[in-house]
Image (spheres, rainbow, N blue to C red):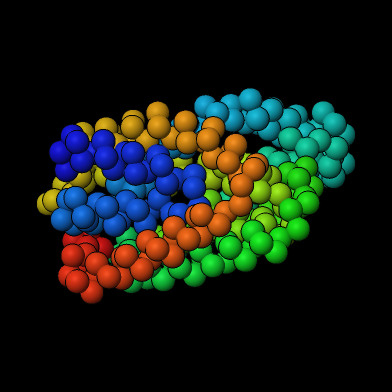
Length: 289
């Protein structure tokens, strides 16, 4: 992967990470189209560090409040009974617990299914299926969801459901934001509330998986044809700068418009992937799958 291809892949990651269209699916598809092979799960995970860094920057005040209030609650500043320590009297403190609870499914399943994530789950026929199926789910949730609940109405049970939906994104094509937003809409949350919590919930999982893959790559034998350190770094930096702008735009869009355009896009992309597979332009399993 040369410099210009790395920049392009960084743009793809940034433009699709926060939209409910699956960034991992796009990296899988476009990586093979421009590089003649699947760039691999490690490249995907590491470049996502860039977009999550943009999330950390954009939500820095929210994250600071959550961390401070969570620690104060755990320490017993708001009362020593267990309800107070669990953030019963402070939304930010409770949010810290909810993010932790919602992160459990993807951490557990990510470790248990790592071999499948790096291979079987990257089959493009499966990716196309997930793009279509979860696109339909998103359309149904957006149309029939009540759009009433705010982030302050989050409960432990809902936090866990959000987390289970996020874990589905271990399969390219589902979409981390798409899965969590769909779950939120089905549970009656507003588009903005579902998207906002989706951003915060993704931080531990994405940063954790990115650095996990990065540490595994350091010192490991280089794989022939795999993106090198320089290309991965360039893609990650591009995803950070462009990703920050995408966050701003996306939160404004979801406050006003429906998700219908994303549903249509997912269905069209799924159909295009199947056509390219049948034509032999794309291979179901890339070199690193």
